[in-house]
Structures are given as structure tokens and as C-alpha cells.
Image 1 (cartoon, rainbow, N blue to C red):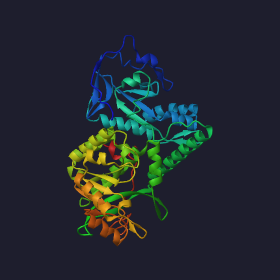
Image 2: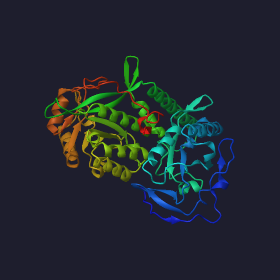
Image 3: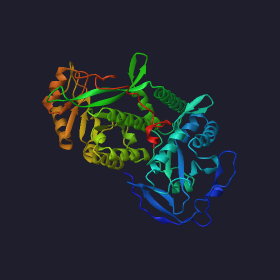
Image 4: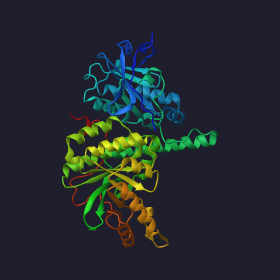
Length: 461
């Protein structure tokens, strides 16, 4: 569990000067404002996130701090000089596209600091949109690096974190770079690891190319109320990649994005796509999958929460299905985020309970609206018949901690009988309804829109 930081006040140390440690991007050599000399600074927690301490100047001079996460892996896989040149070339060009000139960008260690003196006053409601727009501008397109294409994982904060002033990375316990194991000792295993890393990156860049070209869409599978076997509780939105007349699952690329630390970009894209469908279909309820790795307080969640607070009719028809194919990095932070979404009216579902990294302790801490039991507890195929008492006891346990229990993987009439006898509230599986790209209720396409795209709805006034 992460240790909560206590808000403190701090005066810059004698003689400290950010300006002396700056490396200015581009050809312009105009001096960058000395942020520490701008006035006494106050340390304050971000809204709803007491563990992230930011430096907020009292004066009108403001800054955004950009941190590119996972640089050691990029350097090892593609070469330090190559990656650094690509970043130095791309960063000023991409920020210029959103109106930030090169002379307002400076380097401090592994960070880039952008002065925002011309923008809204500190703590304005538009801060999160501004920071997310900076992140999207820097991250949307792959970097070209001597024949390779690489995606960046970028963190952006308002103000200058104390760690930035010390020219060191952010708290790695709070912002894990990726799901890769430590560097191995042997050359052979190191080469295998870097090859796997590059393969993941190739898969990720190709996937977002398909997103931009409209070849990634949603398919919809009904979750059926067990008492009727006809009435849908909601439809789960499942990712599909379209290649000609074939629709394939996106599970391998989702795993790659989790390992690279880039899955939040996909999750926010799917969520906003689902919200757009809910707006167009007022009688439909949808479920959207969210990786456990995305359950960290971030600007995009606050932008989403602001929207849901203004549109309660959408929130009450949206179910967030938390997939724990990777371990949650901060259970307390994740539980608090899910609680805030529940307060806004969203339903929270824990997916694949009993498989992956799902735990009873997290179930007890979050008390979700819905628990979805993994199909391994339900399957009643010949030669692999699960004990009915085990399923019933597990359903009883989950029912004590959630108001609705759903059995997944219902593929036969025997599965239906076993699940209903165990007391589940709803069922999902091919026997009751396959995922459909064009269900009868759908009007128009359900293509996923990249939330980092320059024309995404997030950036519209």
C-alpha cells in the first residue's frame, strides 16, 4: 500500500536555480523563466489524490512537467542515441501543433518542463483537459527511430514535482514503467527479452494504425437475466479487429499493451466510444472493459468523471468491467477510484473472478455492483464436470459481497442448469448469444476512436 504524503510548505534551497540546469529544445536560446525564483512555492496534493505532491507557484508563472516513462527499456531496445534524437526532434514539433513554442520547453534530467503563463489561472477546471492534450500531442503518433516505430508512455503533471527538481524519475512504486521482469543477467536472455519488447511494440503500433483506419470496432454480447433467459441486463462491448470479412479478438495486443504500460490509452478510447453509443441509443445499457493497470488517479479519469457528473443518465447505463489480467499496482487507490465512479452512478463489475489476479480481498474492499465468475467454475463439458457444491459455495461468497453475480462461459444447456441451480443472477456465453458486430439495436458503426487523436471529442469545447 502506498504511503500517503502530508502536504507541506517548502522554500527553495539557497541558490537553487532551475534555469541553470535547463537544456533548451530547438534553436532558440531565449531564457526560460526561473520557476523557483518566481516566488515561494507551496506543496499541495492533487484533487482526490493525496499521494501525488505537486509544486504550485503562488505567482502567475505556471508549468507542466512531462515525464517519459520506460526510457531504460527504449534505450536498451533501440539505442540510447537513436531514441534521444527522436524525442528531441519530435517533442518541440508536437507541442508546437497545440500552440506551445520551442522556447517554452526545457529539459531537467529525464523531464521536460513547459511554461504555461499564457493559459488559465492555477486550479482552473480546464487544467486536466490541458494536461491530457499535452500528453496526447506527445504520445499519439509513433516516433521514427532508424526504421523502428515506438510509442511513448508519457506522464504530465501541473506544476513541477519535487523529484523533477532533483533530476530524478517519478516515484516508481506509483508509476510502474511496465510489467516486464528485471533485466536478466545473461546476454542470451537479455536479447530474448529485448526481442519480445520490440515485438510488443510492433504489435502496439500496428494496432493503433488499425484504430486510426477504422479497422478496430466493438462487438456486443448480451448478459442475460437468469430468471427469464431472454431479457438482457446489459451488453458487453468486446474489441474486435476487422480484416476483410474476418473479425478477430484483440486479446494478444491487449496483453502487449499491458506489458508496455500503454493500455490506459486503449481503455479510455473504448470508454469514450461506449459513451458515444449510449448517447445515440438511450434504451441500451453497455459494459466496457478496463484493465486493472488503468485504475490510477489520472487526468483522463477526472475528465471522464466531470462528464458523468453532468450526464447522470449516461452514467447509470454504463458498467465498467475491471479485468485483472495484470496485478493492481495500488489497491487502495484503485478502490477509491471505483468508489467515486459508483457514486456518480456507474455500475462496477469485477471480471473473471477466480482467475488471473482477481482476489477476494479486493472484492471485499470494492464491494462492486457485479461479480462475473470465470468460466472455469461453470464449465460442464463431458470429462470436465465441475463439482456443483464448489460453484454454489463460490456464488454464495460472491453474493455476500455483491448484489449481482454473473456466470460467464455458458456454452451448453448443462452450463445453464448448473449456474442457475447455484443461484447466479445472470448468464453470459455463446449458448445464449454470440458477440455481434451489428446487433439489431445498433445504429451506425461502432468503430473505436483513438482518444489521443487531435479531433477526439475530449478536446472539443
